[in-house]
Length: 622
Ligand SMILES: Cc1cc2nc3c(=O)[nH]c(=O)nc-3n(C[C@H](O)[C@H](O)[C@H](O)COP(=O)(O)OP(=O)(O)OC[C@H]3O[C@@H](n4cnc5c(N)ncnc54)[C@H](O)[C@@H]3O)c2cc1C
Image (cartoon, rainbow, N blue to C red; front, side):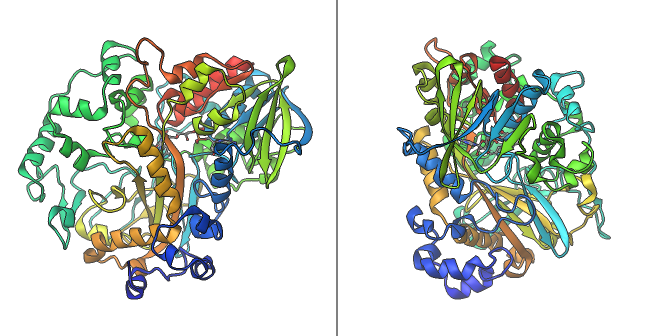
């Protein structure tokens, strides 16, 4: 365990990232918390020691799954509302449509409903967090007077192909410039131009870090690892040969259509088997160097995922690759904000332009006003969706510890499989069995605000990857300058946010065990436990290049996503033994007036599937 001296040099007592809950909560819960892992019931006495700093602005009390959301969700899992108690307050409200979940899918469902019914019918969105957006939300910091905006989860926006449904959809909500403006280089010295998204892209301005696991107790950096053909990488010659072979391998035929022979074959094996078969890699090479980043888009390592998961998005959702992926300052929070503006124009001041919507604060009072066609009700965890006679559905939600009910003519379940499977009452066996095949992997997105990134600049890099410790990669990002809040230029002296995506994979274990073990680890670790590990990791990797974690880390926000990614196992897409895949069962079979959306039914964690599944689900109930 770290000593007090270590704590001081790591900056564990520095103010901005920990605020004033430091003394009260840490001292109250004592050494278990300091050890970094503790049971949830101990943390329950001090939820702030779990949630940690949330940043500034509209999203400050909604970083990832907050304590209240997590604990209310677990009451559903533990069947606390089965049977429903009698003391439920009936609000007397009747809606034509109730949407469970206010992520991009739920918000898009509300918009499609409004459009398909000419704005003449009433729709209510119930969202359990303090702000809409789901995995598409922002973190905001103010560092040395500069506003920094980062993504909590969903990041990349893919410019659509002209003439497609998505192109029209984006255009209709005011996202009409698919080549965003970004910060330009403002340093006096040799320019290093960071990428526009936070994903590690490799290239001459990138590096690999190798530490004690590779016999490098002092740490070793290998800059431009692929350009230098891993020459200086302290890894076994065999692994080097395999990885270089993979880089230069002739591409194999890829699936062309969803459902063609290649896609079906890929869905019958794990991504790990596919990588081993296609590139001649050993299992150890896949697990040491590629997992969980390979397949990271689905949360788990390659050993657990269907090989088709790596191809499905490109097969089903081709985009304008020439423009390159774009990113709103706060990732796809930008998309969520545009949809909200389209359903409730007063939700943001100003016009439905990219600049105004990016810049404006949320007008929370406008979200749930009586009389408007669409209402978004926050901090409400739906606990039961109960079909009644005459096609009506009773929807019961928990808000502030009390239960309320409304009635609906139709319901779109857009909250995701992990709650939907528990709350829809009397769900028939096919849909119930289908949901039992959904595994959602956890993920921790840690946003670390640093006062400058001179330490990376000094090494000549803007991004890096590592293979031990916490996280796997990070990159400096040029932020889109929409809305004018973001500094127009970036230099090594600019404060920036470095994002660590922390995945929980336990290669070789059954998929169900991997996701629940990961969730237990994610939830049982207090903020301070992660903060210490992140500070240590940064000190080990960047200390020699000049980063002083005590002085230079200005803030850390943790976004805990207990059920971040649908991790499709082999057979998810096309089924097994002649049976349809579980996503298709739900898409094709609404239960009476209840239809199923969310990106997870597509098996592709992408905001575009959230939108497309919402459209289909609304069509099924209107
Ligand atoms: C770390 C991460 C990175 C990602 N990166 C990208 C990316 O770069 N590009 C991209 O396109 N996609 C990305 N995604 C995928 C992302 O899932 C989608 O983009 C999209 O945001 C998902 O929207 P959704 O509405 O389908 O689901 P969600 O965003 O999960 O929204 C569902 C909402 O419903 C709420 N809810 C659930 N149950 C209930 C209940 N019972 N009552 C009330 N509310 C409930 C949830 O809390 C949540 O707020 C990423 C996802 C993660 C986790």
